[in-house]
Image (tube, rainbow, N blue to C red; front, side, top):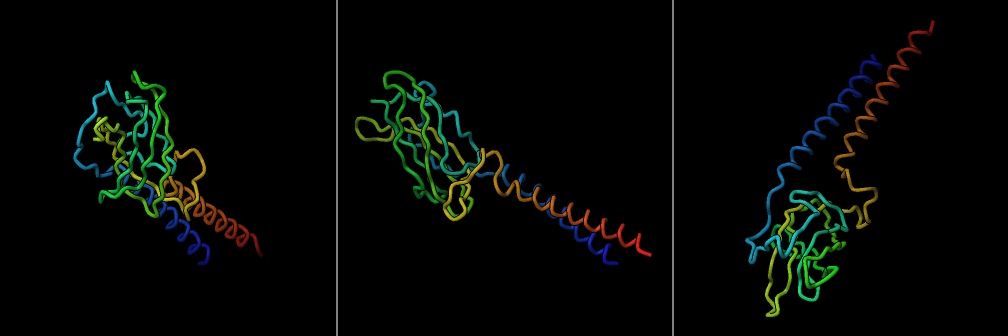
Length: 187
């Protein structure tokens, strides 16, 4: 009877991990576009953002890459929350200012929960206006206790958790099978 209960618990743990993995994949694909109306959309001959892509889930610092034609090669990268609050605001520098030039900027941010956000890459015009805005809707992953995340960022904690639980369920099932075998061999 004990072995049956042990194996049933193991099966339920594996089932819960499978359900959580599918629910996480479904919710990640339903990322809402939280970007406000674009005040001055950029054209590809002035600003191009290669990474991150729309809908990406990113951790801090997010690396923003692309090409931009900006006066004196300087531009802004801002991350806005769904409510319009500023989460991050940094100045970027491109390789050159007289032609479409590559850039790569690390943008640190801090959020306590997974947050829908909108990344803006833009230039400030000579009159002080926002010009040539590229918007990228993102999901910002929280960092536990404000500590930076490790690894290559290919899997979030919510994606690796089901694998760990599934493994725990499998180990529990194997230990139950071992107990059953040992119990069967006793005279």
